[in-house]
Every structure is written in C-alpha cells, then in structure tokens.
Length: 150
Image (cartoon, rainbow, N blue to C red; front, side, top):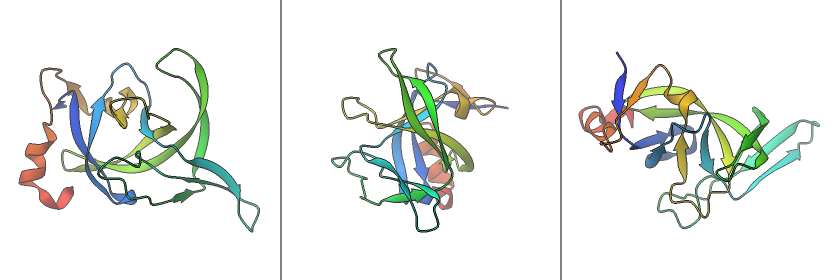
C-alpha cells in the first residue's frame, strides 16, 4: 500500500549530513531538484571527470557549506519552470522519508528566486506515495516514532 504524503514533507539526505529539510512535492516535475549555486566539472590527477558542488542556498538554516564531490553524475536536458530547456547536472543520493531510505535522482538547479530549495518529482514518488494536497509534513509522525531513521 502506498504511503500518503502531503504537499510539503521533511526529508533527510544522510550522505550530505542534512536532516529534516523541507521539500515541496511537485507532481508536475518528473525529476527531483535541489538548489545548487555552485557546480562545476573538474578533471582529477588521474584524468577522471569529477563534479564538485554545494547544496542549499547560503542563507538556508541547514546550509553547511560542504563541497560534495562525485564521479557518478550525468547531464540532463530539463525544462525549467519557465518552459525553457537547460542542461543540468544529475546526481544520485540517499533520501530518508517516512523512516525509509532509498536512492533518488536529483538535478542541480539554481533555485535562488524560488520559495523551496528542494522539489520531489514524480520519479521519486512513483510506486511509493500518493499525494494529498490538503496535508503537510506527514513524515513528521514517522520521525517521532522512529527517530533513528532521520
């Protein structure tokens, strides 16, 4: 049975040391997105392409300034909220929601002028959740009963 999720939920991104961050559920978006105002490709000493990036805006209370490095990334053409196509980096990370941990795909996007730093799209939701737009923060109840899985 699918879990009922509200229009906003608290998620944790354990690989990046981020706990209980508000994410907006966006059934209009296929891929999930997270704010990044710094993302660049580099070549390491072995000649491998490496993506270095930060997540969340600097003014976000959970911003930790950590520079994340990965070789596991691609680029993806995405239509932004204005309907314009743009290339974005796509990365994978673990997400904890409703006490369950799973791999999720995020595109890195400058969301400076947007209200929400994280969007959860259909690809993450499919097969797991049903959205009830009358509700918010349904995952909080799970976090209180299962605090080890934040």
